[in-house]
Image (tube, rainbow, N blue to C red):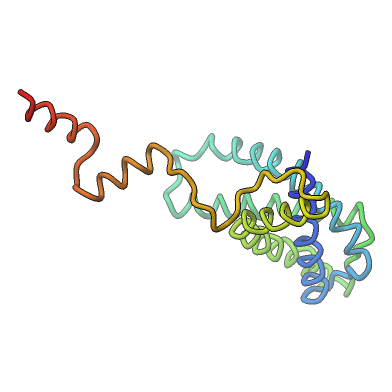
Length: 188
C-alpha cells in the first residue's frame, strides 16, 4: 500500500508541475484546475496509459516485420504520441482545463500538450527511482518511521550473482565456466 501511495503522490506532484508548464507554454488554460487535472492525469498515467499503450503496441506489432528500423522508431513515437494525446483529451474532458485561442490556438492546445507530456514522462522515468525513494523516506518520517523498506542511498548493496560473475570476468577475462574448466585441468 505504501508503495502505491508514494508512487501516486510523487507522480501527482510531478504532473501538476507539467500541467503548469503546459498552461504557461500553450493555449491550454490550466490555472487552479491543475490540482484536479493532476489527479486525473496521474490516475490515467498509472492505470490506463500502460493498458492503452500495450493495446496500441500489439496492433503495431502485426506489421513490424514490414518496417525498417527507422520506420519502427517513427511508429514507436507515433504510438507514444497517440497515447499521450488520448491521456490529454481525457484529462481535458474530466477536469477544468480548457483550450482557448480560436482555431489555431485550439490546434496548438491539443498538439503541443501531448508533446510536453511525453517530455515530462521521459524526465520522470529518468528520475522516478530517486523521487520515489525520497518520497518514501518522507512517508516513513511522517508515519513515525515504522515502515522503513527503502534502502538508504549510501548503504552498500549485495551484487546479484550475474553482477558478481561479470566483475570476476572483468578482473581476469574469464567466464565462470572457463575458470571452472581451468581449475579442472589443474587438478587432472
